[in-house]
Each structure stands twice: as structure tokens, then as C-alpha cells.
Length: 165
Image: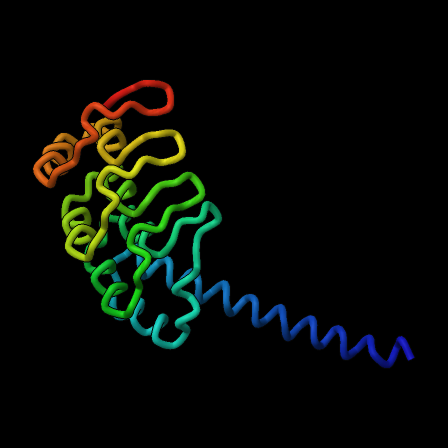
């Protein structure tokens, strides 16, 4: 009896392995589309598999985080157009997409996030570092000027170790 079920188990295992490989390939295509700014591929994948909207990286970064970090304002616009609403979602370290955009000095992404309702201009991560702090740490002076122009109040906000931007 055990031998009779073994081939079915092996065949089921192969089936699930191939499904997982196909899912991994789809995820890789999705992440690549986001990072490279390929809005057509992004739209195609998410319209086919809307459950991938909730996909996140191993550190809890959402699709919006990845787009912000890559400086892809057009991807953010596409995500919002497709119904993505988690604009200020935090990752495992408490970083928002705004934080990611400021870390990279991506001015167009900052403006795009704000246009779509981000309220995270001064939201600190788990270490008390704000988007302004991150921009200063990375040497993005234009980002700092933009944040100040947009109303950031974090110029003197200390992190958890009492350091300020």
C-alpha cells in the first residue's frame, strides 16, 4: 500500500516544485520590472495575479518600497493606478517608501509619493531616523532642500542615539 502511494507523492512533489519555480520566476520578473521601470510588464503581471500586490522582500519591503528605492516614479504611478494603496507601509525596520526615496535622493519619487497622499515626510524608522536624517547621511543636499520646502520639520530631530541630520 505504501508503494502504491509513493509514485503519486513523487508526482505531486514534482507538480508543487514546478508551481513554486514558476511562482519564483514570476516574482523575479515582477521585481525586475519594478527596478527597471518596465510599467507594461508590471501592469501585465499584477493584472494577471493581483495577489502579488501584497508581495514583500525578505526584509518586509513592499512593491512601493522597491520602486521608491530604485527611483522609479512611473512605477509608483502605475501601482497607484492599479489600486495599490499602501503608500506609507513600513518594512521590518520601520522604513517607509518615502524613507527609501530620500535615502536614494530620488526627488521625482518624493514628489510622486506626496502627490498620491504620503504622510510619511517625517516618519522615523525603528532607530528614530527620519527621511531627512537618511538624506543627510547619504549626502543628498537637494533632497534636504526639497523636504524643507515641502514642510519637513525633522531638521533637528535626533535619532535614538541623539544624532541629528
